[in-house]
Length: 133
Length: 133
DNA sequence: CTCATCTACATGCAAAATGCACATAGATGA
DNA sequence: TCATCTATGTGCATTTTGCATGTAGATGAG
View 1 (cartoon, rainbow over the protein chains, first blue to last red):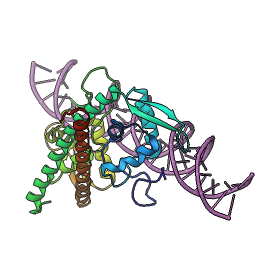
View 2: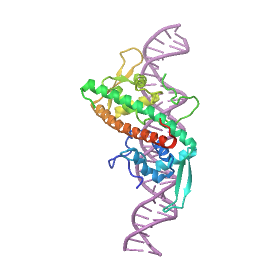
View 3: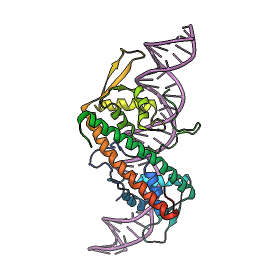
View 4: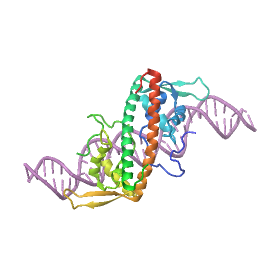
């Protein structure tokens, strides 16, 4: 069931996200690495990264895939052979592979900044409250 | 010199960010933890987190601080005593302190997802190319 | 056969975040 | 006097994204 809310509780509207921005993009690229797939499948496979909630709406995923295709990072073909409605099957291009690689470098830096932040916070807590977490 | 470009090279326009979304918010809160400060100072102090480029424009920082104040997470007063132009000095409220704490929990989850992603990528590289990174 | 449901993809719209250009204004020193 | 630095802010356009909704073939129950 795609298109469901992402923010946990019911009637909250448009809550702040507080997660990695555009992280959907490298996730899709990595899922497509060495294994072609289609939007609806990718939506389900995103779970594998350990999100508590799906990090994006289905519409966002379809749009992201089209955006990747416009930038020649993935390519698509129609698969009408199998059961069910036709699917647009995406696969990674060589360029997309390189792009994924650059994303990984970026995410390593992000991890480092995150470490710095959390270390800094812990130090603060030790000084101000004698707590540690 | 605030207001400079953020994307490294010169003529590129509006490049994709590929970093943590809204990460500015917890950074500002942590910088204000136990030490009041003003926008222009905070802009410089952001370096301490190890960013390669400042993660936000000065206008974004000032707007973010106002937004935090509207949500009662920080409070401000005017400091006109010292040298130079008047500064709006912000300090963390109790509520803001709790909010920072919740941000930290969120960022720990983010760190975990990031680890999962990078591990998954490394595994792929080992399988597909015999490389490891 | 009919109809609800599931799978799959897509669009329209509005809200939110944010970069860039620019405005404002006091302080400072040449 | 005037350029420059510090400091805060606004206006505008672009990008991203959630939510609602549309379309359409496939599938199974009745």
